[in-house]
Length: 294
Ligand code: MN
Ligand code: MN
Image 1 (tube, rainbow, N blue to C red):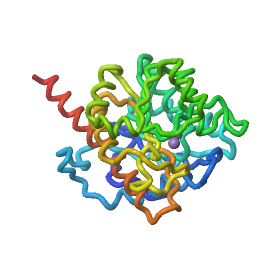
Image 2 (cartoon, rainbow, N blue to C red):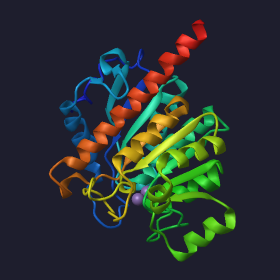
Image 3 (cartoon, rainbow, N blue to C red):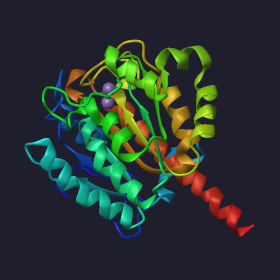
Image 4 (cartoon, helix red, strand yellow):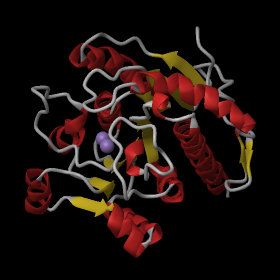
């Protein structure tokens, strides 16, 4: 691999439980481009942190993580999706938990699809400021503004979004008419994330895919985004969602950071959330193993 790997990704592919890959593509980004730089910026930022976390009481040196590097992308989104779906499919078939570092949000699709092939009743949870429920955007069906629509129509109706505060009138109507579970950022502020997460646990049990569009988080914490939107949720809210869902997460991605719009804090937070996910998931599997032994 040509680039710096993610910190503590010291395992070879064969023995790894977690496989990190970057997808440096931002071709359909509509406002500010640059998320293609995010995978490498997050890898660099990942070296800031201790391997041990007191919050999760786990040390990443004890976890088998592999960094597969950046996947090859094409100039256009359709060919890129095709190319990365081969890798996504292999990771899942090989029993790995894929961790995709975007890149733009449309890149989630092949990873979600690969996980659903293995876990047909899988649910999908997305953190996002935006509905992403357009049928197409600027003439592009696979635009980052359409990802949730494709998940709902082609993958699963066991769908929940959190942090929403932006969409067209039509998108809000679609949500109402179809009874889609959407928790706005204002819902999170009013009710508290714990209450919302426990409702999600009631609604989605079993395997789940978690997709984090970083713009769910308030731009005060995460300013370097493709499409920043004020009045967002906090990093602690995101960590609470990750911690609670981790035992059942079969695929994870973190997308839409455009690193050149700040001095590094958004990529740093992105790297931290990726590490938090791995720790939360690894900790849950430790308990599982212990339970099985009893
Ligand atoms: Mn999005
Ligand atoms: Mn978004």
